[in-house]
Length: 164
Image 1 (cartoon, rainbow, N blue to C red):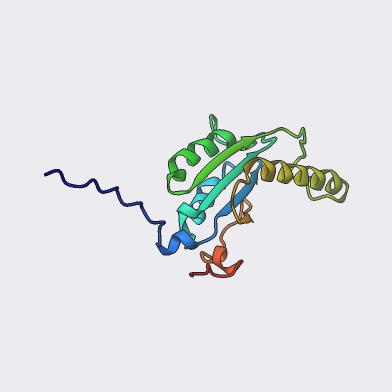
Image 2: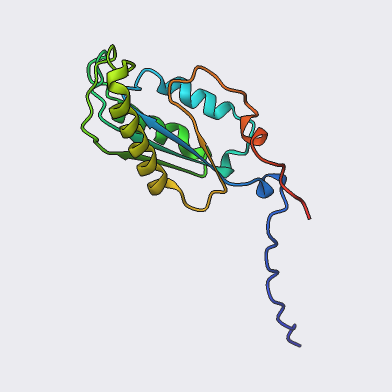
């Protein structure tokens, strides 16, 4: 006698606590940041938030890599670290766009450069956000040169996930 066919059970949605955490997009514009990127990734990996819920996107813009060791560029190091460090994260993207701004480090904080500099910063952030944002509920801007930040900063900015 033939046994009745039983349909395969439908997998249930994950009930793991991390599956209820909101999706987060970390956005980081970079310029001449080759010397900060190792620490950036170290800090990002130290976050006490599920990496599978964090997407990361960078915009490299107008780097001249002054002072970088020969053969090292911000874009090259960024792409290399994104490949080697990014596997644990939901998604990692690297964009590049030139805004044609070249200010000497000594000039960039001067009053006469601020309007132009801040206008380009706004345009670059808008560009990065428009390219990278997908279905994430929250966006966290983290500068590439931050020395440190609290490991719990993600969860501190929004209410805890609801469990129903």
